[in-house]
Length: 242
Image (cartoon, rainbow, N blue to C red; front, side, top):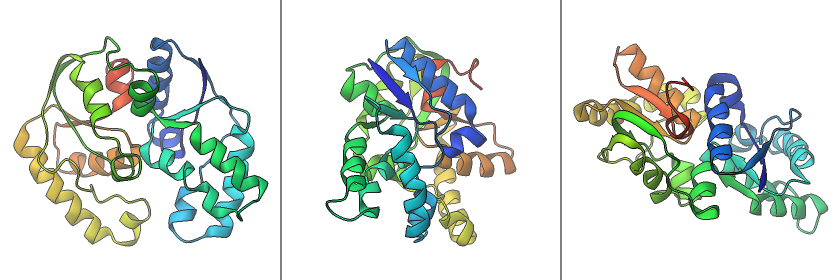
């Protein structure tokens, strides 16, 4: 099978090792991976901030880049979810809306693609230590992803997967929400991190770079030794992709 990698803005700019790890994971699963360097944003920041005209411009480019792909895989639940909403930017019956629907049907978040599409939940990964999973809001609530990443982590040799209390609560990032309402964002985050620190785990894992950025920022400022890892990094080999 051949797929196109949609790397996403945050992976490209802040955690490129997660993008590289995604390629390694997909290749290990027997998939050929293409990367189109013309790709930019999926339009989510503008869309969520109410700038529909600007979001439409970005979305048109996204549709053009991925129009002829067999399947698209992205290491981001929020961006995969946004692709499912692109059709809302275009009039009913328009070619762009139909193309957006078609591309949405071909777009998969990484854990969903591995478990649901390929039927793969063991990639021969190894990690020495304890891990816990953070459910990103879009991946959980928009895409219905809960068991898929946990199945993959449960099969990582040497890792002890520990369920965090209220793993499905928000980390407070919310894209531009954290910039517009920093005090509320930090209060939500601190509540989650209080639970995390009591667990004494080695790392917290998520499928969204935005969540990891939010978690890592506060953990580093409080001098915590808990690592933040993207699911792809764990599945591909943390030490190689850190």
